[in-house]
Amino acid sequence: MATPNVQNIIRIPGRLCYNPTDLTLDYPHGGVALGVVRDMVFHFGAKTTLTTGEEWGGVVTRAWYSGEAPFLACVLREFDKDALTKIFPNTQIGSVTDDVIINYLPAGSGNRPGYDLANLEIKLLFSPFSTEHDPFIIVYAAVPTIDADAALMLSYDEEIGIPITFWAAVDSSGRTYRKGRARDLNALL
Image (cartoon, rainbow, N blue to C red; front, side, top):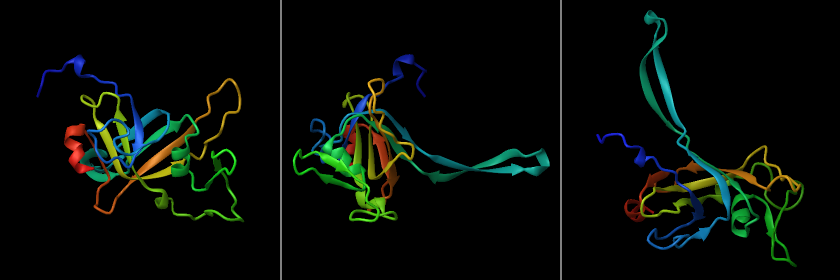
């Protein structure tokens, strides 16, 4: 074990992209950039089941690893065409502007309530700005969901931002996520 050193404390700014193919390439690593985001955080979602001893007044006697429910959450800061079509279940492209239209037509055409969001699944990559020194995070089957409290702040005082959660599902190879350096993860894409 190394001696504690405050120089080992890191901050990791970065960007998101999807369907990367080669971490030795510059961002977006052969994939597609996912627009400007802020407030990125990866939650391991580790679960623990505790066993307590009645005879000792409910003191914990065992702790059991019970799996994880990992996710990456962020706020989308722009109306990036690629991001919106990968995140929202109902979009179309404007015939005049070529911009993305987000819509909800539950009685009309489009994806109705009950639509399986796994159909929007992507391979998501958090790419740090310092690709040589900081860790990457790959979510192999990221299922995007829009925060239930998402709202567009329509004023000069607030920046528009759409809170998004990418749940880490299990891909067809049985993988969920990996965190590590590019040199180690490139072969595991």
